[in-house]
Structures are given as C-alpha cells and as structure tokens.
Image (cartoon, rainbow, N blue to C red; front, top):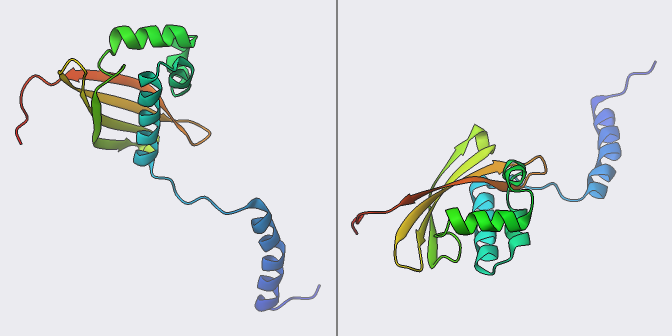
Length: 149
C-alpha cells in the first residue's frame, strides 16, 4: 500500500467533496429564531385581519391543531377567546426569550385593540422538525394602567 502525501490527500478530498457542495446549493446561514418567530406571528395576524381561516390555521402547531381539527373551529376559538388579536388595531413586538437554544421562542406582542383597550399577548412559538416556527399557544394579558412614557 502506497502512502500519499498530505497535500495529495487534501486535493483528493476537495475534488470529491466540492462537486457535491456545488450540486447541493448554498448552505443556509444560521437562522434568527426571534425574527423567524416574529415573521410567523405577523403572517398569522395578517391572515386573521383578512378572515383567512386556512392561512391562520396553517401557522398553528400540531398540538393546537389536535385541539381544533379544522380551520373553522380554530377561527371560532380565536374570535371567542382572543378577540384583541382577531382584527386588532395595531401591534408591536416587545421582548422575546429563547428557550432551549431556540426550540421555543416566547414573544411579547403589544396590541392596541380596535375598541381602544391595550393588551399584551405572549406567543409561545415552537420550532418544528422542518425548521419553521408554529404558534403553540398565546396568553392574553390586559394592560390596565399606564406604563409611563
């Protein structure tokens, strides 16, 4: 058995691996869990504002979908229990917290409801196997006093 020099071995490895890397396309950069979670929240809010039950339901996690097996039941639950989120006036993202290195994102969303009352929604966003985030729960907290300016 003939031993090869280190430069020859490296050259051989590069010649075998480089074509595979080119064929597989660019390697995705590390994603930003908070930005990804916020994008999903924004998309679901937009869907709710347009009464697009199918799109809003599509952003729900499997555990939420198991509780509400179709989009109409899901939308009815949102209308009943999350009225400030359904057809909200304005919203802005607040603080966020990563749990488990991004396996879950807790995202605060400040909501100005159409009737004038302010709320804070705490979204629990779960990372799915495909790398996307889904809404896995929302806790609504009414803002009862001024926070100051």
